[in-house]
Length: 253
Image 1 (cartoon, rainbow, N blue to C red):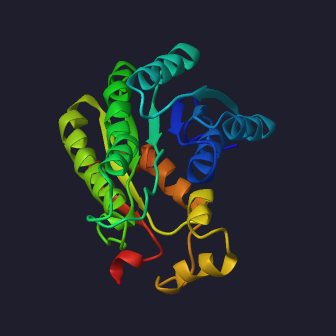
Image 2: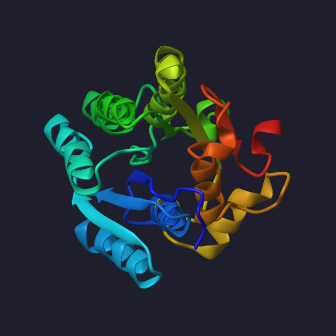
C-alpha cells in the first residue's frame, strides 16, 4: 500500500466499472478512504470488495448523477462517514446516441447534457465547499479527447465534453485561492465496458480504435486512473485548470 493519500478521503463517481473502478482501487492503494459512487449497485459493491480484500477502506454510495438531491446526499454521506473530502474524480458519463446534429433528438441531447455536463456542475457545487471546509482539495472531471478531436455522429457527447473543459477552467480560476484545484482528464479510446458496448464487444473492433494512434493501441483503465489520481495528489500541487490528454498521442494526429 502506498501513502500518497494517507489520511485523506477520495470520492469517485462512475466507480462501478472501467476507469472509475480502477481509480477507486488506486486511491485506496495510496492510502485514501474511498467513497465508491454509482447507480449500479452490484458492480459498485464489487469495487468495494476488491478494495477491502486488498486491505483498503471504501464505502458504496448509490447516487443518480442526474439528481441534485442524490449528489448533495452523496457528498454529505462521504463527509459524515469519513470526516472530510480531499479528492474527487467526477467520472460518470454516457457516449449518447451516436447521432449527428440533425439526427439527434431533443430528448437525447437533454439526457446527455444532464449526465455528462450538469452532473459535473452538480458534483462540484457540493464537493468544493466540503473541500474548502477540509482545508483544500483537488477535483478531476472526465472530459474526452473527442472534445478537441471530435468523432463523427457524436454531437451530444462532443458538445458536453467540450463544455466540461470550459467548466473545469472556470472553477479552477474561481477557487484556486481557496485551495481547490480543478483539472480535466481527456481519455482516448480505453478498454472499458462502455467502449465494448459501443463495439458489440468484438476484439477486432476494439483493436481498430488503436490503429490511428501513434502508440498503436488503446488504453487500459488503470492508465487513465493513474493520471486522474496524480492530478488530485500533492505531486501535482501547482497544476490547475488543465485539460490533460491521456490518449496514446491521438491528439497529435
